[in-house]
Image 1: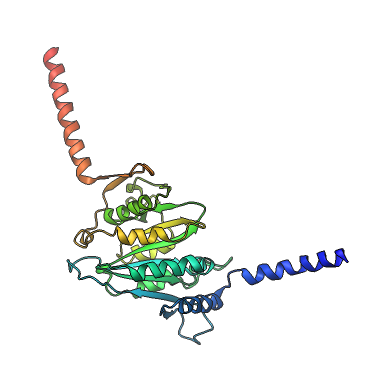
Image 2 (image 1 turned 90 degrees about the horizontal axis):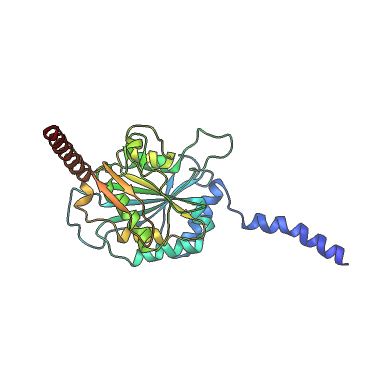
Length: 292
């Protein structure tokens, strides 16, 4: 009798695992859309193919319009937070809680939480419709838009550039301050942004999709199980709109993790440092020439 019970339990394990696994394709999009609606939000469906609506995956967007008047017109008044549908679905409770917190906030800029479909390529399929790329290409007002691509991983990370493009300083600073506010450590694998501008390093396809359309972007990897509270902190630390009008790409991040703050050295610092070092070198040459 015990053997029969054990066998039945073993046979039920794969069925249970399959029931809790993340669906794929259109099933994932439909399931996530249903979960968002059930949580009390009104998502927008953005199809990736002009065919039968339920046969192919589609992007899902939840919009949070600005509730405060904008102080600057020529600024990045639209922030896109681009998540993978797989991550949003597998962390439904944390994801809907994140949407709920945004709904209660008051900002002077619009927020669009995009759940991109098709960004993770199935094995052997490279030429596919990426939800992030399709959405970025459809944005008409890219001069007033900024984006953050988000994914989950083994640890928190920040990437601040793509091929020959660098994340603006104000966006990098907002993310760094968000990690600090949430008291979370993060990795910063490439602090020298010049490597991006020189074309030595390529970024992920998702961030590249926005950068290639002249939309400043950064990529954030959140540690698995940490939730999405850092993204709310990013919105809280979003700079004054006047600052977002400039794309300052010449800076250096020196990551000192919590409780120490990360230092961001601007282009002005390097110019002043070069002038001071040059002046000191000339003075030293004069001193040694007179002493000899």
